[in-house]
Length: 104
Image (cartoon, rainbow, N blue to C red):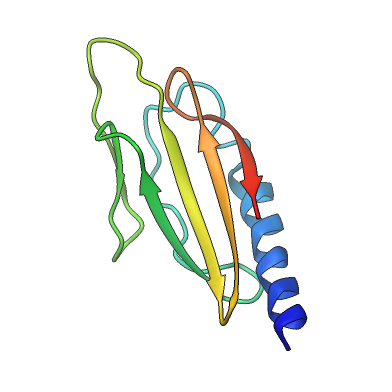
C-alpha cells in the first residue's frame, strides 16, 4: 500500500517538474498560479518560500513576487503528499527562480 502511494506521489512529482520546471527557470517576474493538487493522482501540493520576495497563497495557488532593488536568492518548496507518501521538490535560484532539485 505504501509503495503504491509513493508511486502515485512520484507520478505527480514528474508531472509537476514537466509542467513547471521550465516555467520556474531564468528570471521570473510573473507566475499566475501554481497547482495545489497533482495532475495525475491529485496528491496535495503545499508551496513554501524561503524569502518574502515570493509567496504562494495556500488557498488559491496565486503567486506574489515582490521586487527588491537587488536580485535575491529564492528557494520555492513544493511538498507533494498523498496518504503516507511524500516528496519535496525545491526550485531555487540566485536571481529569482532558477532550476530545481528533488529531496526524498
